[in-house]
Image 1 (cartoon, one colour):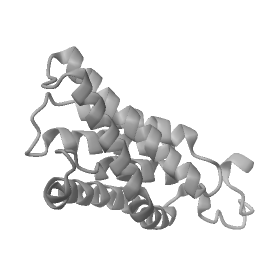
Image 2 (cartoon, helix red, strand yellow):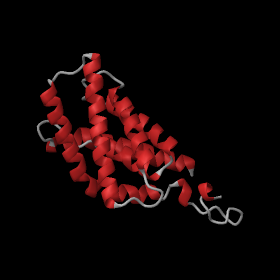
Image 3 (cartoon, rainbow, N blue to C red):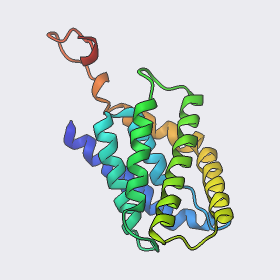
Length: 182
């Protein structure tokens, strides 16, 4: 099951990257594209263990840092998506998250991810825009991510819920309880 879950996560992150860097660039708003990799990382963080989510955030960040249109210092998206995965995994509810909780999590994670990316760019001297432009890009990115959340996240959450470690039956000895309840 672990290998299957890892392969599904890798395929999900790779598909999100390909769609984000190829198809969705045609629908950019002032040069800002929906961050599908961030949405995939949030979906993984809401359905998997925090450790798995952080590894997925790292992998998604490395993919974004090394994708061909990248024009920034490598590692900026990696750090941003690591923090996004951590935050999303920490705020997830024990049960099935409500629609409002998912949208709120995506909004917070989009703001955090874009802000960390911008701040690391400023610290490294890799920022080609002034503060007003950066704030505008962060705001547009947040709006686009939140607008696509009702379309993208429900199917991802349904797919990834099949691989959630604490929803699997534990058999006769476990009594059907999740590990935290034993």
